[in-house]
Image 1: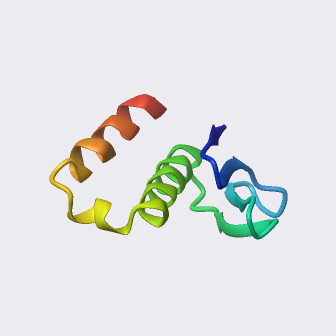
Image 2: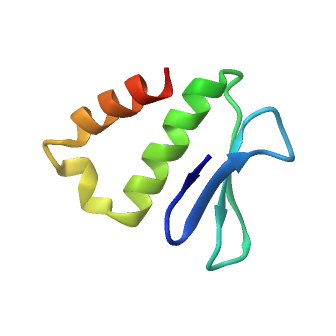
Length: 74
């Protein structure tokens, strides 16, 4: 699905959703299952972005990023 240096976003083995696997800790950090795969993916991508850069949420480009992720997932 999606990769960063530390996190891997992939289909969940525990539910119908998406999981964020932390390569550094060698375990699943988050399992997201809203019932809508597209929303799960948007939440996962945004979560990884915020974890990697907590100040990102205060960035004026934050909402543009969310918009980009929404249109990219379509």
